[in-house]
Image 1: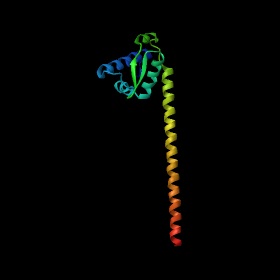
Image 2: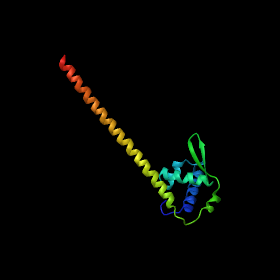
Image 3: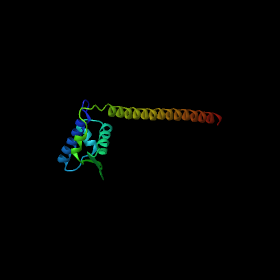
Image 4: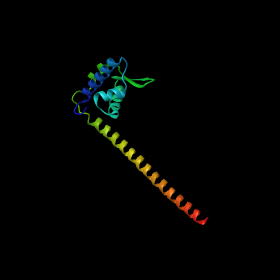
Amino acid sequence: MKGLDLYQKAHLLVAAIRILEYQHHSPPAVEAVCRLLDISVEEGGFFFRKFEETGILEAVESPQGIRLAVRDHSKIEEIPRGISESLLDKELKNFQTARKGFTQKIESFQAAQAEKKKQMFAELEKKLKIGMEKK
């Protein structure tokens, strides 16, 4: 959804929700809307929460997970047109960067644990060899 302002994105998201709701006869899941629009779930979730705060969308909890519904599409007209969402883009990029950093921390921790495990087994094997040589 690059190159679209917030007003256009709101219309696009509402249209996607309505199409999926028509096709499946039930409110669509976040993942289904994101898949239809070819956007990441994180990006979609960010915009869904933003539009939920403004009263355009509504998140409905069901046994199958969170479903999306259009609450008041007329509130889209309150969004200023043509305003770039550089602030939104920045927040989204910050979130993605933080998530990547968190993933890297987890990977480095896992690598350190694997190295410790390898050293522990090497030490244990060494002690067993020494113990076998004594017998």
